[in-house]
Image (cartoon, rainbow, N blue to C red):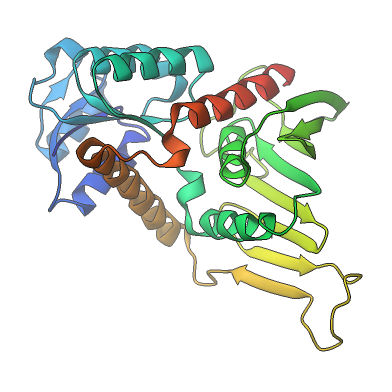
Length: 312
């Protein structure tokens, strides 16, 4: 499969993912604005640098669009060029609808890479939450996130719930750095603590000014399941009042990588991006779409993200 990478900021993690999966993929080129960084990156990888979609070779199979919400026009151009697209999150509902319609009309596959739900700790949280949900509905959610990680937190909860609707929230408190939203998510009472924007603009990606990435607690009648950060750990705290045996543990660590370092996390993220590329390829070849890539699911998460974003 010949792959085009769009963007050379976060796009570098896609370039590294393609290098990791080199037996199955060939890097066909980089699409970027032509900055000094993008020129150096194309030179480093020994591939052509395209400055517009119309310059892209016709034999590109799929594109990794690592530009976030600012790259919607490029995404639509790639689909018009009949190229399958793996698109970085977040995407606004209107842009997402246009992309999904264009992909469907041309028989193309279009996926959104929510990324954080595919990391090891979040995957453990999702799997256990689903298991508990088969026996009892959640009683509440408590989420701490930033403006940049809000979409990822909603994507994680979306993979647990049948739907994020009904959804309605209101601002209940505002502090120097956080806004508190309270309401209902998927019919479940929920509270969001979201780190507010600085001067109406997000902090730079990776800024030490961000105090959290995301922390999610799902409460059930029998206990509370918590994802403490994108790095983990994942902890189950059993409800003491549910008739536990005296010797039965109340706290279970479901996932904890005690050897996790920034470099190991970086490698995990590269592997997660490679998995997202492989999932798109499987959809292209087998026309089997995972639930979290169905149009209804993608729009459900995007609309929830936009609704909460308006309150911020």
